Image 1 (cartoon, rainbow over the protein chains, first blue to last red):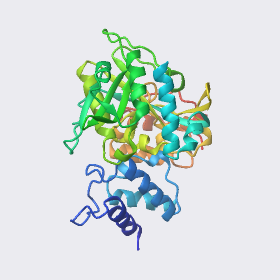
Image 2 (cartoon, chains in turn cyan, purple; image 1 turned 120 degrees about the horizontal axis):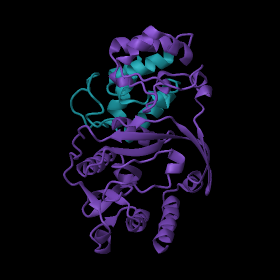
Image 3 (tube, chains in turn blue, brown; image 1 turned 60 degrees about the vertical axis):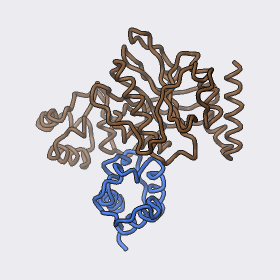
Image 4 (cartoon, chains in turn orange, yellow; image 1 turned 45 degrees about the vertical axis):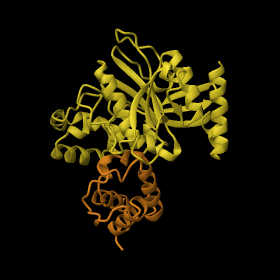
Length: 82
Length: 285
C-alpha cells in the first residue's frame, strides 16, 4: 500500500469511525468538515510518526499541510525523502 | 483565599481522579519548555463562532451568575477559579450545555478607556497590551467534551465579543508541546512571535530567547512574525515563495547573504517583507 492509502484508511477508520457513508475524497477539506480537530491532529500525528518512522516538526503543523489527504500525503512523502 | 484553596484542592483531586499524577509536578517544575506568544488582530472579520450542535451556548459568565447559582461547572476547580478571577475583574467566556459550563477561557480586564491591566503571565510571555488590546489565557475544556470542535468556536466567541466592544488585538500563548493548543492557534490564524524557553521550579521562573541557532533551519523560523521583522509568508505570491524558499534552504543558509541580495530583497518586499535586525547567527544552519 502506498502512503496515501495508509493515511486514507487511518482517517476513515480511526477519525471518522464509520460516521461517513460516502467515500472520503482525497481532496476533501478535513479541517472545514471538523474531521481534524485538536484531538484528531494528535491521533493522526502519532499514527504518521509511528507508521512512517518520521518526525513532524511543530513548524509543519499548519492547516495547509493537513487540509486534505493529498496535502498530508505530500507532507509525509517530503519527510520520508528528507 | 478560600476560593484559591478550594481551587487548589480540586485541582489535586482532579489529577488524582484522572490518574494524571504527573501533571501535579509537570506543570510546576519544567526545564526549557518552549512557549510561543501569539497575537490575533481583531480588525478583520471574525468568522462565525457558532456550533453545529444547537445545545451548546456561548456566554460570558459574570460574578452574579455564580452567586445566583445560574451555572455550574463540569470541572469543579474551574468554578473556584471563576469565583476568584471574577472578583479580580477578569472575564470568563464559556461554553454552556444544559446549564453546565463545559469549557471556558479567560481574558484580562481593562479600564473603560481601554487601558489594560497587566497580567502575571507577561513575565514569561513578554507580551504587553496597549490600549484596546487584551490578553486571553487559560482555556480548559472538560475531558469528555474534547474532540467536539468546541475550542475554536469558544475562542471566536471571545474574539467576536471583544471586537464588538472596540478591542483591536487579542494576545495569548501556547506551549509548543501542547499540540492541541498549537493546532487551535494555527487554525485561528494567530500570528506567532519568536519562541521563548521557560524553566520553572515552583515559584521560580527563568525565561530565555529560544535558541534558534541550535535548531534545524526551516523557513518558518526565519519568517517568525513580529512587527519589527516580519515576512508574511502567507501573503507571498507563489513565485516569490518558491524563489525565497529555494534560496534560504540552499547551501548558503544564511540570513546575511539573504540581506545582501538586493534583488531578492526587493522582490520580497512585495510579500510584506520588512527589514530585519535579526542576527545571522539565529538562522545559520
